[in-house]
Length: 216
Image (cartoon, rainbow, N blue to C red; front, side, top):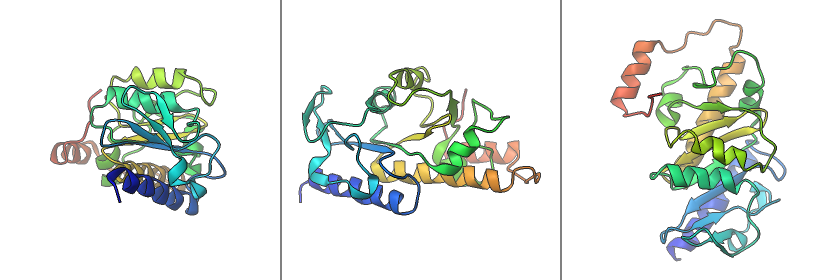
């Protein structure tokens, strides 16, 4: 199996795992990954994460031209914004995961640091998560908002919509977005109960020890 064939299979396998566990539903969500030649493989528009076909993924060349496969997701501006501003990005995942969306529509969220510091892995895998305002699905302004972060964030939360996470490869991106959803679920489970989160010194130690992006 070629490297690209293996990547196609991995994208579909991980997407199905996310779908089967209810982390996105219906035909929501999209996923992309860098190919070894610098192009992209992207989930097609209107497809379900539970039934992606490796042979029908949208294929882009290094110049950003769609050269093969079905028409890509309408959220391409989100994906390209991460790839263009973060050199380390090897994959991007966007979900409509329930708990993170629920947390995004409640009052009191810190737009610069959306997730409360509840667990070490929430910080280690995501750094700070920026809460972006609501945009119409497919609006290129979403990509412009990500570009406005100048590559300083690996994850954003689209208010009333869903999280978007970039990782070094497709497995890392999927693991990180699962951490985002689980942290949001913990925040909702403990909301109003005065949970004992990590203090500033503990957060600082995690940032230093694990070289977490945390400035700004």
